[in-house]
Image 1 (tube, rainbow, N blue to C red):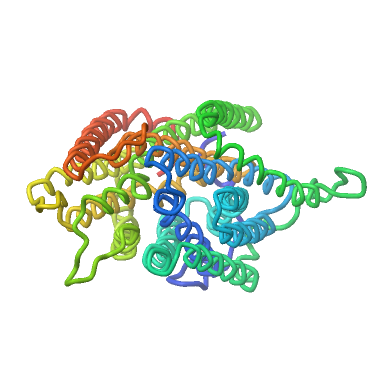
Image 2: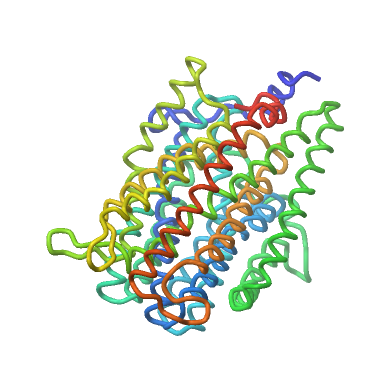
Length: 509
């Protein structure tokens, strides 16, 4: 069977096209739902490290490892959430269940103690597992296979993510650092409830996407009089204390994430091979191998990018001059540069990919990943430029972070929205949710590794000592420069392997 026949077999039925910019109508409902969910998540993230260090009086290393374990679990959870939605829950109920759990988690954190924080983080982790993978899957299912608007649609969706992040890193960050961390966390919870309302009230707009309803297997009896849907819903609450334990004992994550990566990689490649046997072709196994390679590349990017919430925020707090015309910007607010640049440049990139595709000049997916990592590396090297303008307090100018985040953002736009779209293109439809969950596993590993990297940088060391401003600046700049050089090396390697990876993708662009 030819690839053209296979692609024709996998095309969706016609879907509504009357939405924003000629995109399916449901895109904007999902855009705003995801925007407020990201407001909730980033509202938590923007304050977490400073809350751990300043309110709970933890050292940098311990705070960074807790942060890494939490964000790692946040992105690992969609593996389970995607699979349960595929088999039992359907995508719509999974998203709604996740939204409810995330809102509950934010409000639990208002208790203010370390124990309440851990329980709240557990609820946020489980809720995100249901929400994140499945709303992205619904976006992919709004488009027919081969639709050239898909990359553009995911980029628009990605802008929604970053509007939510921008609101969180300005409004929640300012409220949290100015009026109290509890006020910031509470505001994030209200944002999640807003997203839930938008998703439910606009359900007719995305109703044509397949896979929204409860599956037949989900309706079957599982335990006594209860069906699988009911058992999974209640059982999800039991995962919260498990997350609590894993965050507290984050060293276990080394083995858990490695085992999950090996298992999910084997599962996807096996599923691809079975699909090849069913269709008498050799396409899907190779595509799954390509997806695993992209997962490894993705880990290298995001482990470094996610320094924003840990080492870069603490660097901003201690070694960046944040005074602007007499007003001192809160350290957590420096994270707003990234989503602000996404909003500024996102639409430009969205149009650019479509225009480049029309004239046959659109870079291949591996080359986009390579260019994205190159820009990330150059962003970290900007700190060396900032060292040339250090003041008497051993602080670099705020423009150092502005240009660092600018390069990180353009690198992100080469990689992240394209990555979401790529997963929906490479994976067979019967494991779409599982594949999206696997993609978020690479983010999980990256966030956890990012926490380990952050634990090695300036401020309070692992044994509790506090470095001077001069020594801290020297250590931060040294680590950031090393990260930049390693990333540039990885970018060059990916560019060299461009053609072999493209061959595995069998025509996916």
